[in-house]
Image 1 (tube, rainbow, N blue to C red):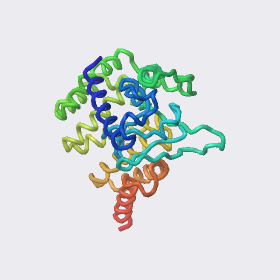
Image 2: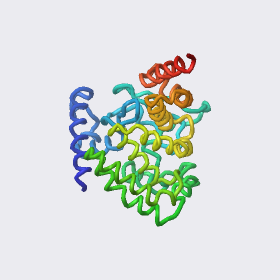
Image 3: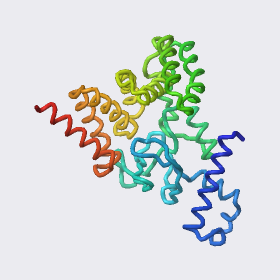
Image 4: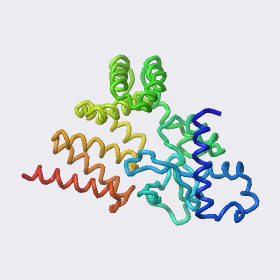
Length: 293
């Protein structure tokens, strides 16, 4: 077992202990099938949710028993959005009266085989949803010169280590070198180029290199639009990030247009009262005031 998995199980055991004390009044009140600690941890592992902030950054893990009843789909009809530790389930398209509600258990910016492996390892089932059966995004995710995108793919673990260490300068420089050297041989929609561009964006934001951050951010938008069809919270949040950069750099009309696109998504995925949506509306009004002068 990897060290990361050991740490994850340790954190899960601590969370489970708190839950049992506060909600279930100890193990004695549980059904006999759930009293074995290892069995209980195994059940919880398959039924807990990653808690994220409004901008979808992971902040913890939570147990929400009623939401655990929902099944998975790689193109679900519902999304989960957190406000603090409160989980909101929101529909993202019209749902027929007898249609099953579905959510995505995992991040879906993955190749079909990668999604299936992750679902099998963590949730113990083989996904047979329409997206997995058709593999309709895989060809575009691997588009471009294979030798070039393999170099990008092989570099990603080292870049992720730099990100984990918050070594933003080294991360920015390495991403820039790699994207300059081989990035031109693969389209922006290539999965490994997109991941690297996103890391370069994060690095530039942390370094305060706003112009470069905006350049990287704008590069990602067509791919996000393709892989996260509207309305999808991931696309909405990415649009808002780009809009904030445009706003800060006083590209006011561009920011207004980008914020409008983000609002059309976030009002559905997050709701009009969510703090992220209200913050977006404030920025929209700021841009309107400037453009109307």
